[in-house]
Image (cartoon, rainbow, N blue to C red; front, side, top):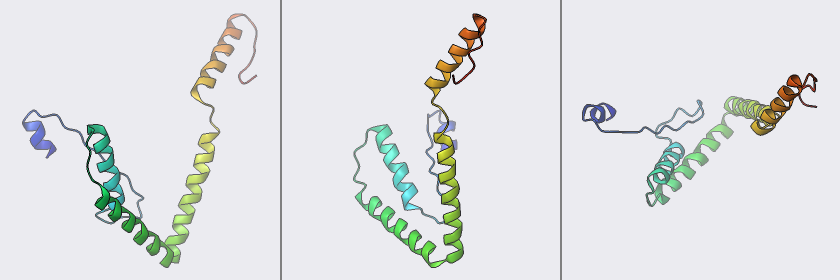
Length: 121
């Protein structure tokens, strides 16, 4: 479709959804629901997404049941969740941009005036 749009001089956009790599099933109604919801917001469309939402919920329930039944998969998902949580905590410890800029400005002012205030003090 993108090639045909390009050939006809039509602008287009693509929307992609991401899912966990261990959910290699198609169709993935959770991702589809997310993409369609985003498209509706971008285009100010009012669509009834109830059926897709129900399919998304059913899909999520089926995936949870599959993970619960398979001990190896359950252990793998638990490991991934722990890694994600650890990375989220690490990211939350990074100072926000405004604080970093303010500290850098203070440091540079101190350098110009001959003093050494150091960062973070």
